Image 1 (cartoon, one colour):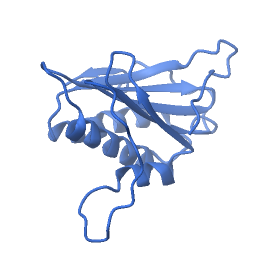
Image 2 (cartoon, helix red, strand yellow; image 1 turned 90 degrees about the horizontal axis):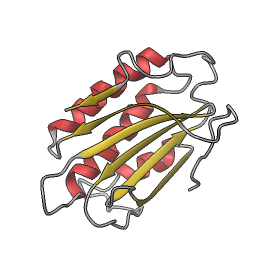
Image 3 (cartoon, one colour; image 1 turned 180 degrees about the horizontal axis):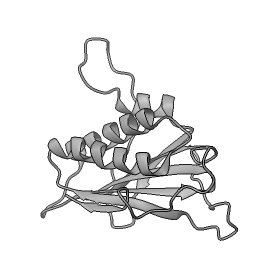
Image 4 (tube, one colour; image 1 turned 135 degrees about the horizontal axis):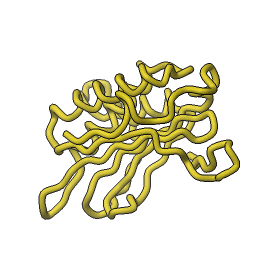
Length: 162
C-alpha cells in the first residue's frame, strides 16, 4: 500500500478531476456510481471503468456504514489524475478508524469490499483524513495511457453535491 505522488507533469501535485459530497445514506452509493460513470465516460479512461465503479461503490458503502460523527456529516469523494494514474479517495468524518482487510467466513453476507479493492486496484491505502475522520483510497495505474490528452475536469465529470 503506497501513496502515489506527482502528476507526471513535473509539478508533483495530483490534478483534481472531480468529486462529490454525499449524505451518509445507502442511496448515496448509487449516486456515486452514476456520477463516476459520467466522469469516466467523459475522460475515456484506458482502464476498466467497471472495476473503478465497483471499487468506488465498495468504499462509499463502507463510509456510509462505518462513518461516525456527533453532528450532521457527509461522505466526500474525490478523484485525481496522478501522472497516468487515477486516484480515488473516499473520506468519512469522525475519529480516524482502523481499516483492515479481513477474510470473512463463507456464510457471512458482508466483509468482502476491501478484498475486491485489494484485488482490482494497483494500490490502496487508508489513514486519517485531512478534515479528521478516515480516508480510504485506491489507485489504478496507466488509467490515462490510452488517452494522453483527455479532458481535465469540468464537463459531466466535475464536482457534484448530493
